[in-house]
Length: 191
Image 1 (cartoon, rainbow, N blue to C red):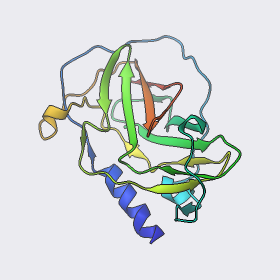
Image 2: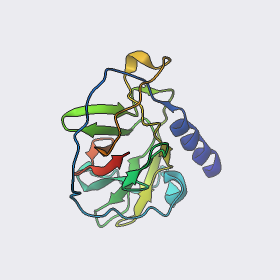
Image 3: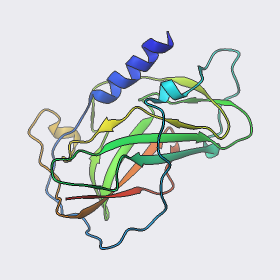
Image 4: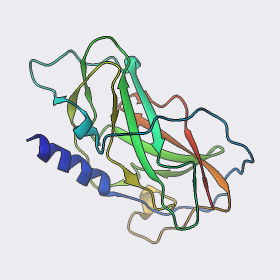
């Protein structure tokens, strides 16, 4: 059953589609700011979670005690290289608790300046709820999602998608699971 749940979550993330929207110009930077992000070791959120929630499982998590972290597989990407995004989730409380880590609750956005260039929810084909027990202090990591470096918008899910600007443009990945949002975006450069 757990294997089936893992496959369902991976398939749901793979089915997230990108779509095009209007042309915008990203912010360029000459220096990087922010701290390093932990390297994910799990291949999927379900794989990393020790056990799915059951009726006798721990109490629901307080969303204020859930830390959500954007993870990107590199700091910069040459032309033709596609970034891989993941979401890190950590229960910062002292007790195990249950939290919905399903794709119905996850979102990723790519921004530059005040503009949003891409969102995982714009053309998400299907989603699911997955209640899981989160162990205190353990970083759980979602399955990787490969971004096509294209704009998205809900109204062009089946159309041609325009590539986002590159040439050293700076972007940020921000993530959310339920009401828990990343405090800081992960900065990366596209060439």
